[in-house]
Length: 137
Image (cartoon, rainbow, N blue to C red; front, side, top):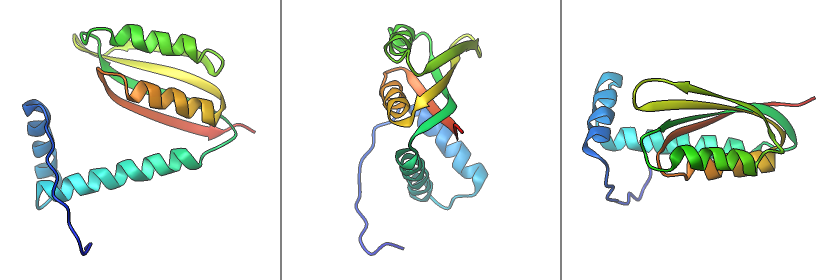
């Protein structure tokens, strides 16, 4: 356990917090704080892994988003045009009435792909972004 603990406040939509609470209850966490610390640790580990990756890679960027969020579809399409040099193809899947999955196949320099992932991740309306890579040999 860390010696010093800092308290923070976080604003979340009620539905997101209810879903989070349901998951942490099912997984057996003793407190919401414990689950949030675990989630933050996992986020940091994934970020550090992505930062260490370098050179030529191939992979897929999975983007989950709400198509009803104004402008998100256009923003994702615009980013794909901006990063055309590392994108080989993409596939769009309608998951339900609200949510879409965009699978973007990438091939090229990890630094450029990382910038693409960061830009997509910071786009309003995007719920989740996951990059899966393999080193190109």
